[in-house]
Every structure is written in C-alpha cells, then in structure tokens.
Amino acid sequence: MPHYDLLIIGAGAHGSAAAYHAARRGLKVLLLEQFGFDHGNGSSYGASRIIRYAYDHPVYIDMARLAFAEWEAVQQTVGEQLMFKTGGLDFGPRGEPVLENMIDSLTKQDIPFELLDTKEAAKWFPQFRFDDAFAVLYQADASLLAASRCVLAHLHLARQHGAVLMANVRVQRLQVAGASWQVHTEQEIFTADRVIIAAGAWANDLLAPLDFEQPLRPVACQENYYELADMRPYQVGQCPVFIAHLTQDYGFPFMPYGLPSVNGSGFKIALHGGPDFDPHVAERDVDRGVAAQMVEFASRYLAQPVTAHQSSRVCLYTMTPDEHFILGSHHDYANLVVGAACSGHGFKFSNIIGQALVDIAFGEQTRFDISMFAPGRFAP
Ligand SMILES: Cc1cc2nc3c(=O)[nH]c(=O)nc-3n(C[C@H](O)[C@H](O)[C@H](O)COP(=O)(O)OP(=O)(O)OC[C@H]3O[C@@H](n4cnc5c(N)ncnc54)[C@H](O)[C@@H]3O)c2cc1C
Image (cartoon, rainbow, N blue to C red; front, side, top):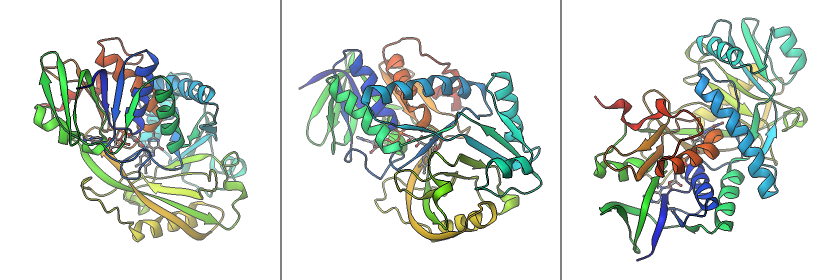
C-alpha cells in the first residue's frame, strides 16, 4: 500500500496549487482527481478569471497582494504568460454599498484607484456606455488570469517536483488509521500522514461521513462568449475587466461581469451567481435565457453590438452563507484539512490558498489571516 506525506483530493485550482507547494517543499505528494485534468465539470477550467484588489474587505486586499506576486513568480518559473494586466472597472449607481466599501478599503490599504465621473470614464474607456447616475472606479492593477493554463502550470510544476498526479481516480471515502489516513478509491487504497480535501462542489461527499459537513451550496454559473461588431478594442491589452454592480433594479438577478477576449475566446459576459445545482448530474445544460440576457446587457452598456454568440458553458460556484471561503482543519483531526467553497471568487487566490492549505496541514503559520475562513464558524 503506497504511503505519502500528503494526499490531496481534487485537481482544481486549489488542489493543483497545494500539490505544487507541497512537492516544492520536498514532500512525498499524491494528488487524486476523479475526472481528467482540466475537465469542464468543476469550477476552475476555462479561458479567463479576474484578479483584482478591488474588494470590500481588507483581508482580501492583503491576500491579493500576495496572490499577484505569487502569479508573477509562477509564470516566471513555468516560462509562460498566465496573467495579463488589463486594469479593472467597477461601476454602478452612485452610493451603491459594495462600491462604497471598496473605495473605503482601497483607500485604507493605500491601493491607488481612480474614481471617474461618467464623462471621464467614457473618454478613458470608449468600449463602454455608462448611465449618468453611475460611479466608475478604475483600478489599474486588475488583471486576467488564463484559468486553465494556471491550473495546468501548477500541475506541471508539481510533477516536476516529484508529485504523483492521478486522473480518473475518485476517492470514495477516508478512514482514520492511527495517526494516518486510509484513502479508499475504486482501484486501490492509499495511506498518507495528512490529507487535503480540495474537492470543490463535491466536498461534502467526503466531509459528511467524517462529521465535518459544511454548508455548501453548489450553483450553476454560465460563462458566455460573444463576438462584437468591432472586436479590436475588446482584446486583452485593450480593454479592462469589469464588474457591473447592477442587480434587481436593473433587471439582472446577479451582478454582470466581463473580461476581454484572450486567445480568441470572444468577449466574456456572465452573471456572478446562478440557480442551485447538483454537481453529481453529468449534464451541464446551457440556459439560453441567460445568454440572451447578457446580449441585452451588452446592448445597454457596451459601445459595440453583439454580432454572434460564440459559446456558453456552465461552471460551478460553491457558495457559503457568508460568501467567504472555508479553510481549516477538522475539529478532531489536525491532519485533515479542507479548502473549499470559494464562493465564485477563489481563483485569483488559489496559488496562496494552496500554499496555506499545506501550511495548515503541517501546523504552520499561514501567510495571511485565515480566521474568517474557519470551518467551524457556521456551527450552531
Ligand atoms: C464561471 C466562473 C467564473 C469565475 N470567475 C472568477 C473570477 O473571475 N475570479 C476568481 O477569483 N474566481 C472566479 N471564479 C471562482 C473560482 O474559479 C473558484 O473559486 C475555483 O476555481 C474553485 O476551485 P476548486 O479547486 O476549489 O474547485 P474545482 O475546480 O471544482 O476543483 C475540485 C476538484 O475536485 C475533484 N473532486 C471532487 N471530489 C472528488 C473525489 N471524491 N475524488 C477525486 N476528485 C474529486 C473535482 O473533480 C474537481 O476537479 C469563477 C468560477 C466560475 C465557475
């Protein structure tokens, strides 16, 4: 029975980063993934994700400082551009609470930003149309991460440092074996001193039998890619990423957001949320209504009309009640760690969350404050 220092379950953004950081420390690491690598069933695949400082909570701004630096380091190491500086816009009605809190947090944390009136904003960013009632926040450091490539880069580096990576191996259950864990799969049983569960929307399948169930709510979020009449201003390098703080009053059930086209992906527009979804269902049906609603968004807030709907795909968010992450160890077993529920905004931090999960597993200090991510915080 092969024995490892650390076994990681899940090769999404978080598990792959954990595997890299653990293997880099010289640990004997095994990573198990139930599907193929870079599969389309979870949360981490696709063309692009946003990384930004513009958050309404200071802990995330601290984390973003570390994450930006770490992505720089990873792309240097792997020799491939993973992060594309675009700048980022947050716009919405003046006085909108999240926007106000962002302004406050960025100011307190000394992150430079511009607050533009709509005339200035239209001059700086002619790709967009802003209502007169909008406030427009521009933060120049915001960037696009080439999502699937980031995950594959971490897996590649993990392998280079000696980690064993196995695809199409589903963990069925975990069992305590003295001071170690037995990890049961259909094919064989592995043992490890420590285990990290980075199983995304499926995490409770493994956590619940260990009396460690978390209040996770997987939801189906659809990313949509469009061709616009003139695509030149909407390419990465020309166009900022954006978050539109426009919900019910503007006819959108969740905030629309978008990213420029990268490597021919098309201009991406999506909603930051979606309906509840059972991750065990294999079909990921595209909702044409959502795709049409994003065309409606484009007709109101983009300068160029949509000329073609290139593609849409369903991806999963795993939400917690407070939309903060769950990072920490089991109440009875310090050598069992969960990293889950990245509530639709975890990708940008996955490099430093992966690192933190390894730190937690080995009882070491994490590089950022994880107190608000404690797994026990929802216990009655
Ligand atoms: C459309 C969309 C847009 C997003 N945009 C952004 C953004 O702009 N910026 C941002 O920061 N974040 C964004 N996010 C959120 C971010 O992508 C997620 O927080 C992150 O990818 C979650 O990664 P994960 O590793 O926790 O989960 P996953 O990627 O789902 O990985 C979990 C893995 O565990 C595997 N697994 C599960 N159970 C088992 C088992 N029993 N045995 C073996 N393997 C198992 C799964 O197959 C899966 O591969 C977005 C998410 C979506 C869906």
